[in-house]
Amino acid sequence: MATTLISLLQLLSQLFSLLILARILMSWVQVDRYNPVVKFIFDLTEPILAPIRRVLPQAGMFDFSPMVAILLMEFLVVPVLSTIVRSLFR
Image 1 (tube, rainbow, N blue to C red):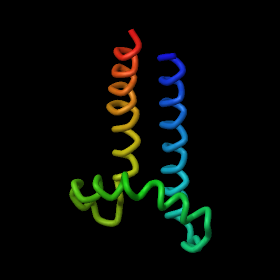
Image 2 (cartoon, rainbow, N blue to C red):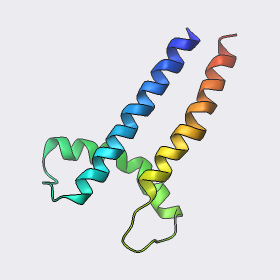
Image 3 (cartoon, helix red, strand yellow):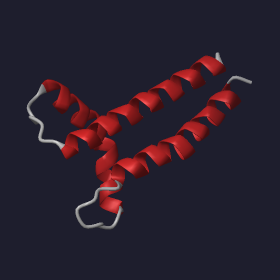
């Protein structure tokens, strides 16, 4: 059971990373903000990126919050949650 939950957690992490990557790519081209797919991606990623953006210092016109979010998720959130899941199912 624990391995299934950890696999699901890793899958969700990868999907969220892909959504952030899609958002980065959309920022390089002009997209219709009212497009349902674009709106869906922005609505899912903004609650994570906005707090990071508030904490990070301004870096000119570059937004490093997506990179920080992916790194935090891969190196902090997923390992910590995996450890918690493993400890719950011992």
